[in-house]
Image (cartoon, rainbow, N blue to C red; front, side, top):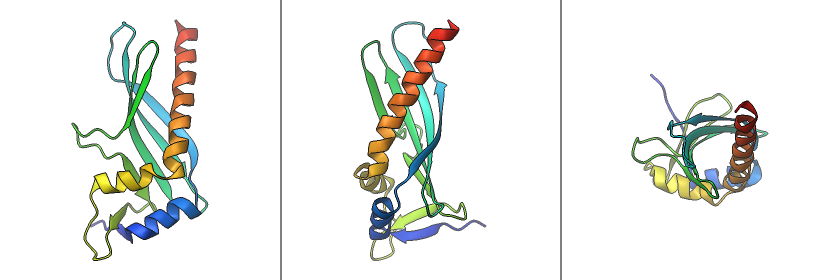
Length: 139
């Protein structure tokens, strides 16, 4: 039986502010096989902080010839936007002051205001550019 590491919202906010997460790695997968100017990609980016916590960002990107649209998670498939694990790799769940679980949307909103979200956007754009350059080299 697995147990989540439960933290309160304020503890999550403090963690995101006081122990910034740094990018470790990202993987990208092509979801469609179309040869036109538009490609849909799925990716996972992994971050860690000085306390040994890990954050996983599950994301999607639609790459057009002149534009990249990014989003986290996938509501259609139920994929969570962000997954947090403590230093023992136990999944972290967030609760309010009364001990009730906080929705994934609310956790996403908290993380979206953090430096993690800001650096994630920059990291993903860099990963997508590198991927595009490698594909151009292969073709």
